[in-house]
Image (tube, rainbow, N blue to C red; front, side, top):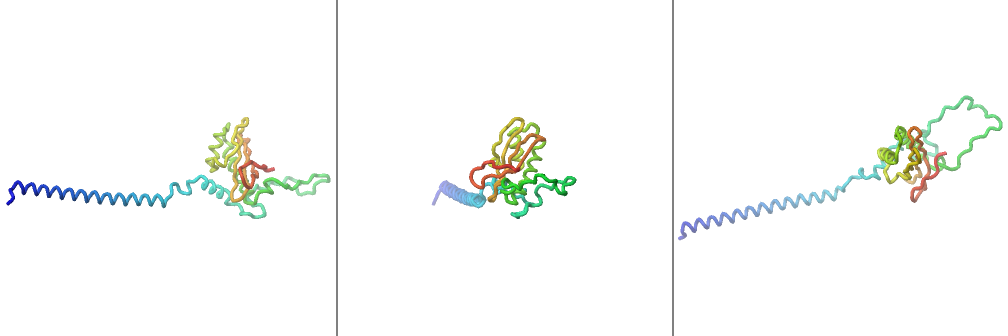
Length: 213
């Protein structure tokens, strides 16, 4: 027959073993839950790439181009009505010109004939929005102009030739999209700001082409 001291020792030993078993079970359970959570997090990361498509500069730039050209015809041979508004004809414009008058020559090169209808229309809209944004910019520096252009949605990769020239800041915008050749050539000089559309090479590196006549 065991002594009382031996019974107490055995009971204490059994209790310690039970506690160790319980703690081990709890740790194992927590570990499984943590692994499951980590796995779920990893799967979620794979299924949801960092930075959605809308966060990519190129995607946002293309979206801006679409928004600007939203009112333009896709590629109608006739120039879209959203082009330059017709100027009011001066008095006597409908009369027969006097003999010896020089008739205007139909252009054979330049944006009017080298750009498709959509780009020709969108070009006027880009001219207007960029000019308005730069019009009130006093003593524009290249940094100021870049900031304004970025705010309008024109990304750095599409801004070229940004430099100071006297009191003006010169720049070009590569707006080629979907096979188009549209570009902009601008001179930011406050109320003397001028922005004209131009024709860029169809492929290859950007080179500011012929400006609107």
